Length: 86
Image 1 (cartoon, rainbow, N blue to C red):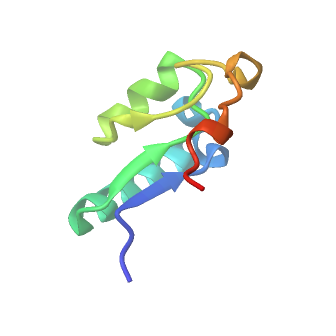
Image 2 (image 1 turned 135 degrees about the vertical axis):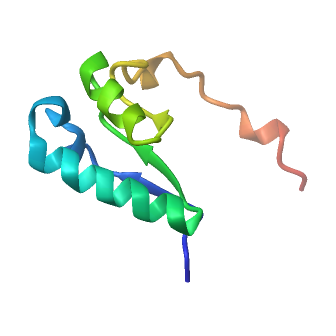
């Protein structure tokens, strides 16, 4: 079984820009996933410096505070009673 998407944990992303071991690890993971045709997404991206390293390895999909902070309270609660056929 081969996944279509692999999410790379924020533990590897945090301080990626200053940690050469993390950079080597992500470079190898990114290369392997690219060779397999698997899309990579990095979570927990907080700084432009982290993003620059991630993008240099060919990964374009990210999530994290750099893009937007979580705002679950801002989401409205859907009215499911009008969307469910009975």
